Image (cartoon, rainbow, N blue to C red; front, side):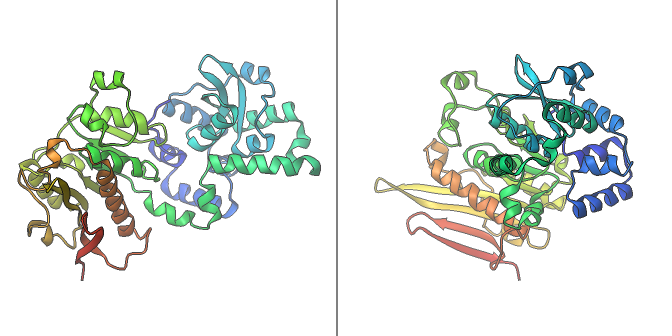
Length: 404
């Protein structure tokens, strides 16, 4: 399956199936009715089932479930018929790679994950018309399964809700904050530098609905990187020395579509490829390249969040600070007044000697992503600071450079 396919809405826009105004009306109906978007489109006659299925299959690189596959489908234990009807999916049978499942909307990752969990096997998605899935479900479970008997409904309800939790944003929706989560649906988030802090930043961003995450780093993944970032790579992988961006993309693409790896260093002469980015996380060492990138980001009018760590060894103990500095089009002056180190030997003296402080890398990333979420009004922001320092020895945070 093509990992770069976005949501069904993105696909419809990219393929020109509907005009913007028509799609907006369909989305309004979806919001009011609570139906899935593919159901709304076909019910209103805006797109035929056949056209929608063929477009999805072609864009996502999927096969279309055949009539023979539907005819041969049989009941597979472990999945609620009500859940299958709700997500418009049908397990077709075993394959060498797991279980083949027909979906009316195969680009939606949540039903796939839930079914893989319930079946305890990998799921291979196929595209299919919703009416074909519905007819097959009627054949397998009977039309009466649409409104099951009360005796079965109680047990089935628990199974349905468990799968819903896995298949959607259900925990968020139930808390009444799905609308808040949508604030994080930014078009393009960029991470420059996939060392320890950059890797933890990706770990956190991969758990948000950001539509696209671009990774920039020209370095390879070495042993000291394994002790600074999340996870536990094997010795075999470390011997391969993959590019950092390829390594991290392979891991986090398991839970987030739209992660794009760039095996390159950014500098002043190529920073323009970031034009249009929603936010840039700058997770790289100080130096001339960083200075050139910052000037480029300012010229492009982009908001960015820079992270840094200043450590030193005193009396056989480490002291220092973790820093997060944000820059937006309405406040940038502090970046060049000493808040951000632009020369070698500044922020990362002891750190550059490969000392392992993954806890500080994780903290640095958490503070940076938290700042981004407050910039988007996901979290309440009473300080509106553009410079935060965590002091290790005193275990306290200091906020400065508040926007007036």
